[in-house]
Structures are given as C-alpha cells and as structure tokens.
Length: 99
Image (cartoon, rainbow, N blue to C red):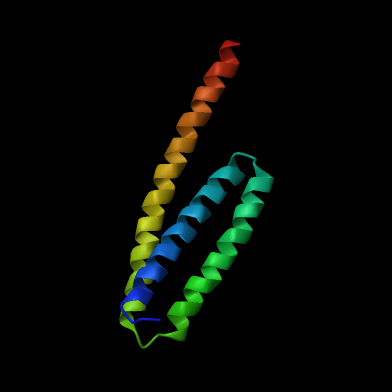
C-alpha cells in the first residue's frame, strides 16, 4: 500500500471504529443488548485491522498519527451520534407519556 495513503485509511477506519464503540456503549446503557453485541463484533474486527496496520508498520510515524487523529475524530462523531439518539428517544418518550 502506498506510504501516504495508509495513514489516511487507518484514520478513516479508526474514526468508524471509535464511533461504533461509543454508539455500542450508548445502546448497551439503554438496554439494547442485541444491537450492542452486534456492534461489538463489528468493532472488534475494525480494531484488530487498524491496530494491526499500525503495529506492523511502527517505522512509519504517519500511521501512528493517523490512528491518533482517527481516535479524536471518532470520539467527536460518536458523541454527535449519541446526542442524536438521546434526542430521538426523548421524542419517543414524550409521545408515549402523552398517549
């Protein structure tokens, strides 16, 4: 794989992995066990692939930087998605209480 492309792909994979992790935790705390378990499996695969690329090529600092940037962006994306889930569940709760 091209040296300049690999850090970008690692970052994208880690963004998705961290965001999926945060959504998985949010779903688990809301009692959605099956959804959380399914996302856990997806999360594990993404994590192993991303970390494997970083560890295999430790001589490339850009890969480590891509991983770190991916974590930061993934946390942000996960928080945004979690806020959206909270808003949608509040609307559902309000509809149920008025019925």
